[in-house]
Image (cartoon, rainbow, N blue to C red; front, side, top):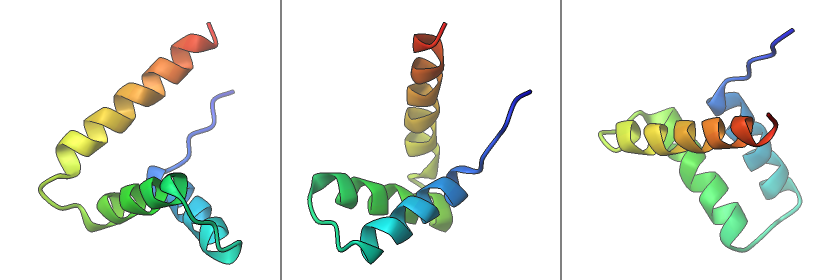
Length: 64
């Protein structure tokens, strides 16, 4: 069985946790940056989406 989760939902949940725990640092900044681009759908959405999709495929291949 395959479970799919929206990137906006995933980054939104992680952003909420980062804000709630008052996380600071590069990881929290990248997380909020990605969440903003996925929700806004700006012109930079395409390249950033391709980068994240490529990274997700890479992580998937690590398991095989």
